[in-house]
Image (tube, rainbow, N blue to C red; front, side, top):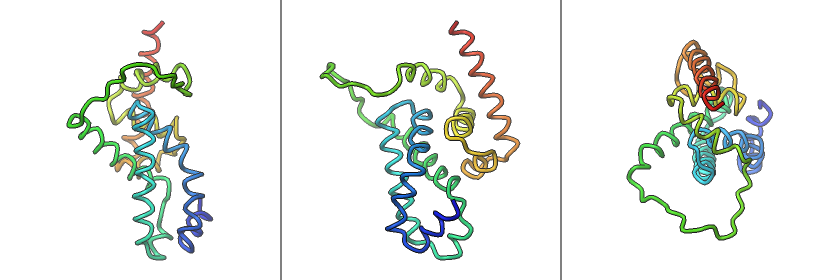
Length: 171
């Protein structure tokens, strides 16, 4: 990550595609599990990178040296996600009229996992997704969410326990 940060500091336009390539899949799948919708996750991922690019363009050398890239990106993504959920109720509802031969490339159990994750309170869902879907460390999750590390650990533990109970009820 330090090499990528140095590359972003020296030539943002040349290095930014590497950031998108390395962080994009994790951001997408984390957001996918948080919002429960493929298209919304794609839109939020793209918007995260747009905002990151704009912000990085204003950074000076000292700010790049202090940058913890993954938590910083997730702070942007989580803020966008919160705004998206808050504004969702104000948007018209899309209703698909019929199947026009579109094939969903997502795994067949995606809907089940979306339902399982939606059973979690938002703080637990964020913590579990960032830890076990995205693979972030506790300190990174703490930095991205603004929650103390002990609280993040408790959210993960409680979220996993709740997921276990939900899955036991499915049987």
